[in-house]
Image 1 (tube, rainbow, N blue to C red):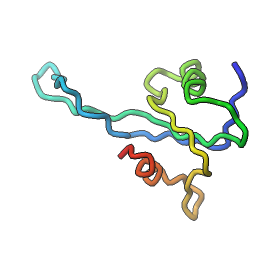
Image 2: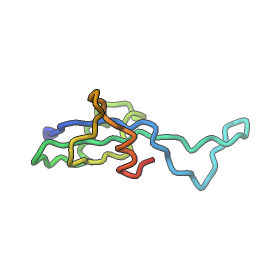
Image 3: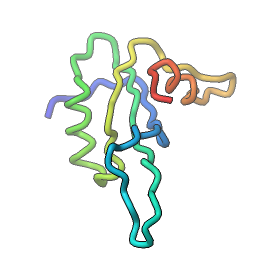
Image 4: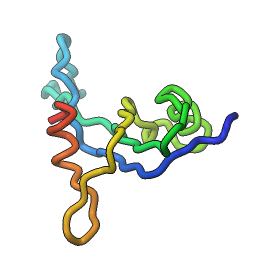
Amino acid sequence: MAELSIADATRLVGVPMPVWDVKVLEPAGRELAAGERVDAVVQLTPGSRTTSEALQAHARERLASFNVPVRIALHAQPLPRNENGKIQKRQLKQELGWL
């Protein structure tokens, strides 16, 4: 596999999944919530040709299936951070329309 050129990345855990047409019922007959999924935002190094598909394949080889991001967004700009240097995940979710 080609080398991945990643400058920065973050997992976005808790991105709401769309409501399913078919309701899922647990054994007691209660409806389960549609749930949440793991998505990721990656800032590539300048000039990188890495694709989100290559990143997903890389993750599938190294992570448990429930930790592999469902979507990977490639972010051209540096990821937004607060004054303490923490990535602003809520802001990223809003920018990407994933809230």
